[in-house]
Image (cartoon, rainbow, N blue to C red; front, side, top):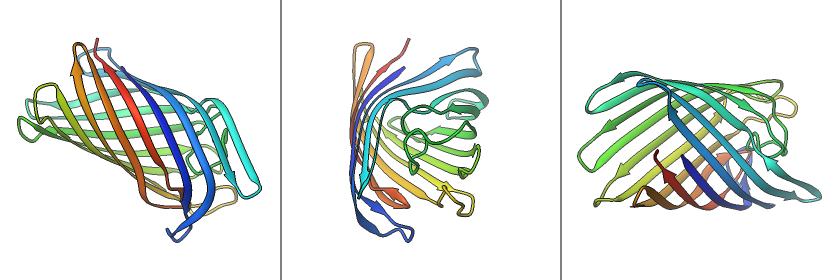
Length: 228
């Protein structure tokens, strides 16, 4: 179980050509709960829910929301596991909420969505590991389907310490249509974790160095990991 408190801000965005521009302001305060629970040795229940306070202003346009963002729930199945690596397949459903359901759409917009994800993790050495996840997310209505790629490099410099360097990329797969512009978003995230007793604490930051038709976010977060 991972509980994350996030503070996210932006005052710039990326236009259709991927160039930065002034863009009012955006802020999001979020408390998220992520859960993995092993139903069997090979099947895992996965879910995520987040409570948000969000405001977005762009010129005369103002948008705000307080409540749940999209809630995710699904199952992951291990296809192969040995001493060095694990390969899994995951299926998820996303249920819209009052907050941020799609990163470049008005708050509360977005219907149900479904996702299929392939996951690969490998120990590179006693101190290093790598994780790669590739997903296809299908959305209802006018909203564009998405391809997603998440990459993680983990390093344990000492006992009870963990450093994570991660990238999270999203790209829309459909042509432009009314209410749904093509978009891309690429985030970089770095965090440092320290295990204290049965709890692991992670302090980190995230930035959006590149994108298209999306805001340039800067975020700080604190995560509390608990295994049970």
